[in-house]
Amino acid sequence: MKKKGLLLGCLLFVFLHISGQDRYQLGIIPQINNEFSLGDRYELNSKIEMRQLLKDGPSDISAQKGFHFERSDFETILNRKLSSLDGIGLGYLLRIEEGQIIHRFIQQFAHVQNKVGFRLAHRFRGDETLEDGAWSFRLRYRLSFEKPLSGLQIDPHEFYLKINNEYLPTYAEKQLDIEIRLLVSLGYNFSEKMRLESGLDYRAENIVAKNTEHQCWLNLGWFHSF
Amino acid sequence: MILISYLNDRSTRFVSTLLFFLLFCLPYVETKGQEKLEREYRISVDKVPEKAKDFVKNTYSNTKVKWYKEESFSGFSVEAKMKWKGQLHSVEFDTLGNLQDVEVAIDFNDISKANQERVHAYLKANFQHYKISKTQLQLKGPPAQLQRIITNENQAQLEKFAINYELVVKGRHHEDNIVHFYELLVDRKGAVINRSKIVERAVNHLIF
Image 1 (cartoon, rainbow over the protein chains, first blue to last red):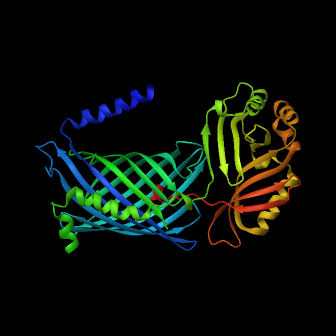
Image 2 (cartoon, rainbow over the protein chains, first blue to last red):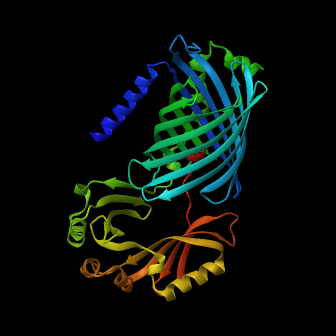
Image 3 (tube, each protein chain N blue to C red):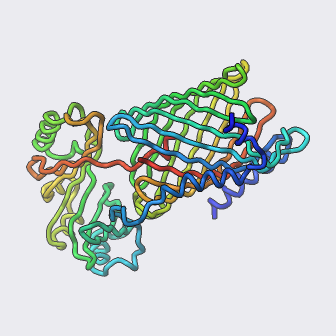
């Protein structure tokens, strides 16, 4: 009961906050993530992600895009494994948004910890984005928690819970800001090589600036390893 | 440019997204028959054989117990996990409730100095670098004897009754390109009798 009350309180807080003068966006993000093993040391990860906006507002201050296919991301990261649970990666993302092409360069270090009954993953990432001739820079830290809903480890044909919490300090147009993301998703493990996840992804952008935007996305993820 | 104009065509909108998703995903659906049958899952206490319940109740009084069932090629087993005197205990039974073994998580530094040295000597000879991340004592014997040992003996005494140690080692074996996790089975005299590489589950959904 306490947990339900806390969750309800958080949701109420978010919606009350949104109902003020902050902007909001609601939509769907499907993504396909494929991993190709390149020997013992290297692997290539490719991700295709698309954003379908369903609604935005309020009408007086939002971009008023409405129901709208917003953007497509094509990301590739070459990951060098330091161990079976740690790796460093370099990557590139191509974004097509409203007819405009955006380039992003990515560097990351990831470390996964096996605990009794759950796993934790720490991802440290830096990225540099070139959009309209201007650069923006972000430093990102994401903590992921994964817990099987049956037993102590995720076996084939079992469900699991995944929670991501990410902090993204951003430097753009000579201004510092921060974005925070929280994803809660339910996953299904078809096999050791294939998973399907679906969950709610809440993002708060431009928290320092006065035009904070709250986003809520229905996330659909398909993960496959070759 | 064709791709860009296609993606920006509002008439495609949501339908294109869904079609794209389905077209790319469906070919990857694998059949159940290709998978390795090996899994463990939580079970309720009423599905546990009486014999197993009795052993746990009489040995670990007033302790919260979690029950699991394990499926593998060799068959089914039932496992009880609990914390006892500050240590994690794992008790394995067959499906009739007959006791198979008891595993107790300990600190590697708590095993005898002679056994520590033999294990370190083996690891130094076979690994470029290593770290012992988990140590378990494996106890086997008649249920009444194990019950008496677990109930009455302290941790230091338990080692006298161990038949094997199970270690998890993070390290780079001479044959490896990267660091892996290994499971070592060590006998009561400190000799490594089996080494197997632990295959980690996929992490791409956690780090990308």
